[in-house]
Image (cartoon, rainbow, N blue to C red):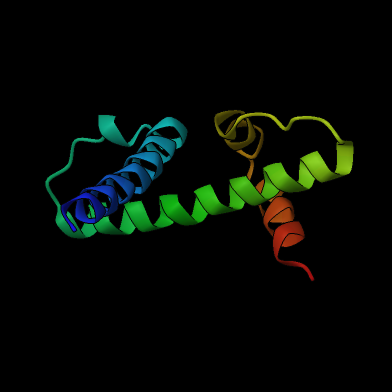
Length: 95
């Protein structure tokens, strides 16, 4: 029983750490210094949405080219123009 509990705890933290690491690498969340909890919650939510879109964009690029897609920060830099970002997002949600 104790081993099952330990395994569950380790799996939980592995998932938590992986998500935090991905958000930090893509959006430098650890460098954000703010004390407004509502702002932080909103920004984290938007970062998670953006991370999901960049993951989807990476997948689509890999499927289209057959090659490894650029990293998330590179994709984010390429989509710095709002027009480019909207086109990429539209491609992701189009069925």
